[in-house]
Length: 63
Image (cartoon, rainbow, N blue to C red):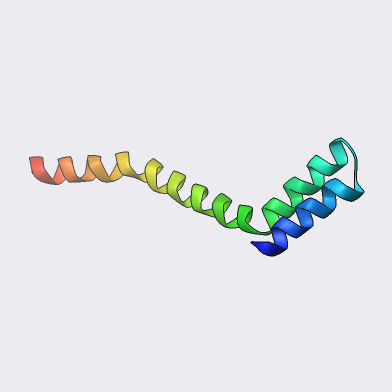
């Protein structure tokens, strides 16, 4: 976390405008943001699988 914070502050000190924002996004994705992104992908895929599992449970219950 400290690394990401230091790099973000550095990006805003040494870069201007859109370059600072782009650098901040890259830094965020390379530190904590990558973990959060993968967590969101995993949760999203799990949520997409719920209707299929529910259909299977209902199908087994009817049999």
